[in-house]
Length: 355
Figure 1 (spheres, rainbow, N blue to C red):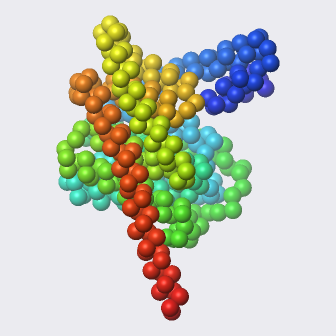
Figure 2 (cartoon, rainbow, N blue to C red; figure 1 turned 45 degrees about the vertical axis):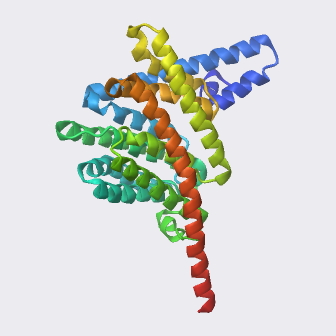
Figure 3 (cartoon, rainbow, N blue to C red; figure 1 turned 60 degrees about the vertical axis):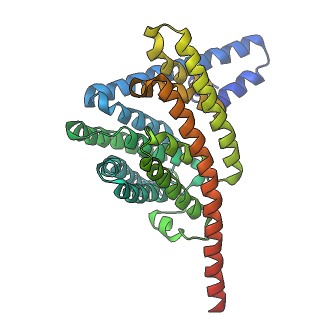
């Protein structure tokens, strides 16, 4: 394996190489390559997001994050359908991410609920047909980040331009990497294969209603940083039930530990280093192979941003509270949703049998 090929491995793959090294020299080499990968990734990410901030304004730096996530994800991920059809779906999804969050924030809570439900459902339908790709962790996360970091006026006009550039970049990367792949399905099959007896379709509906409803409920309570709870729900409502409890077991303790360690760092470090806690969190995420530790370090970045307007205590409290409530809500919502859907399907089967 060449140096470049080893740089392409994920955290788990790199750590496996280090673990399997047969000599100190070989182990040292793999550790060196792994360190280079983390450093290069961090430099690239900072430069990429900074570039978007310079071009489209600091209010739209979040677009740089969303574009970066998409470009990196769709180098490998696919939508499970022919590349030209998938490219059309991606462009529709980017259109939803551009206009949906703004429309949701512009209306009242009921309008917001309707817009979010429609946008998230279409996003899940078009982008998450191939469930093993976990595309919701890229596309739905992007939608929620843009919803949480909403802008208006001139900043929104710049955001439209930024999203157009981001959509184009994602499309180019996706088509370049997948144009020669062969798929059995096209866009028509996505709609034909949607039905209530399908576990995939039920999961798509569950995520749509679960995420939209938590935003609505937390909006009624006028709680800040509602997107944190929504992201927690999205993260727990994975396609496979056996992974759901693992997510909860990683997310709740991870965010509690993240909040506590952030507070310790805040108390120990000098004031001029506060802004670098989020950067340290980014490095930590890069070094983490487990979901729980990723939750710890992700919380550092989230809290470091939110403390500028919520204060340190408020940012830590709401980070833990929203993730705790979001994870438990997702589990309860899934059980309730599954019970209701089972009864609906059973009634349909009974009617079909009688007819």
